[in-house]
Image (cartoon, rainbow over all chains, first blue to last red):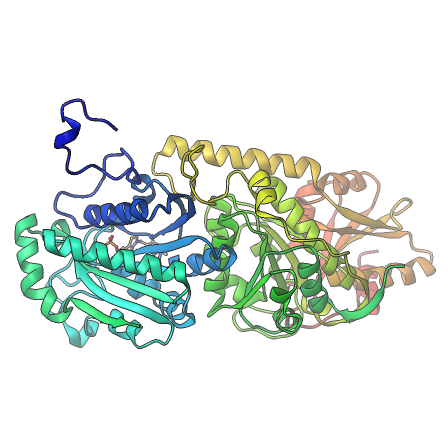
Length: 252
Length: 357
Ligand SMILES: Cc1ncc(C[n+]2csc(CCOP(=O)(O)OP(=O)(O)O)c2C)c(N)n1
């Protein structure tokens, strides 16, 4: 898409052609849009649009297929790793990834997640951990922090009732089948660049048949958290990062 | 000469799946059908035809692996027995909502719940009335022999791909476990990717320059579009009902009475019909082979001629409702059934029949 207003010689950044022109439905401040853009750019830079089949979750990102210009299969809530398993095994040359929220990946889909990782399926899992169920209106997620307020724990998560926030990524790092497990964020320019490198590595691992790669992106859900986007970023740094520290958990 | 072999219905399904060029099998062990995956694992088709065989972590995972494979246009199947098929219902509904072809096999056992591992036909409703949510149908084939368990693998795939409706082979523990003579279908190579692209232009095979991206989904939040999608699906269902009804008649032409039974129950009824005929009673047997689409028209025709109908089922009376709907009050329709894994003898069927004479 050429932009008549911008002189080509001044152009320093352009929307990836793997991103569609559809207007995203995400709330202003939400991390999903940035994560989508990163994936689109990586697919474009790897020149893998033709070989990619994505698996969409049930959650706010259910419509990811409206924004990424690649073929998609839409899973039921939590089942994306099962779909991806079969898609990749039956189409070994394809780049297959799932994109899942914390409810999708770490609650209803825990079994599928663990077993796909344990089998070392050659897929990449992009895991958006925003500590809440965004799509259904802000209920408690398995990753909701202790004391954190949600619509189903209005007085804050009480670990005596709800158990502790689940560090599923640490669990997945223990499995022999995973080759690359990392936790990143997308709230600063620097973190976006790091996450992009992580996604690229995850996708390359899958194509090289190294096993399962997981890129957790600690994210904000400012609507669900009832904060401004800026407040949400600060809150995430202060509260989410100590419990979900950023960095590589495994790289083999 | 075709080679005649002796094997179980379950084993026949496995061999037929390899021979008809299936791309993938995904399943979870459960009695009385575990021989299907065991046979596949022993045959190692990934070394010959390239067929993928994977033991999943649950039936939930199996059905979604089937969903994933089918989304890319592959010929994939899963098999299970009643409790496992219950667990798959969400995924079956999703596959119907996304119009994905696939083959499902239920080797039924008695329920409800964990029930029994003995044979039963009590998942008739689940299979033909939509066990999951939403308005959907499964093409449901009921084999009555080991041969049919083998033959219905390819038939099921063909119908499923033709109409983009999942196909259920509704067998039971009797047919799955018994050994019988069978001639396996001839070897057919798996489709090449070129053939797949030609036959399944709807599949998610990777977005090329010459087409828009393809999204396999059952979701659409616009109610008008969603209604249109449902209407289109329903029109395919009407087409299936008009063209794909299959049944078998046994001694029906001059019948004064009609027994209606499917699967293993039909085999027992065939013996019962023979002995009743020997006593001079003009009774026939109509065996629905497709449970959906249901052979209602032919039953309505027989309702003009016979004095009553009796359905015999290994359940509390499920298909009998469809028979009654078909004859619409023209003749009495009775039911005889055993539950809990009990398989009645032909004598018991004759006794039940004689009660209504
Ligand atoms: C079987 C099933 N149960 C429940 C739901 C309702 N549901 C839709 S999205 C969702 C939670 C999604 O949360 P998460 O995975 O954290 O993603 P987010 O929306 O926060 O991005 C739930 C419970 C559903 N669609 N399917």
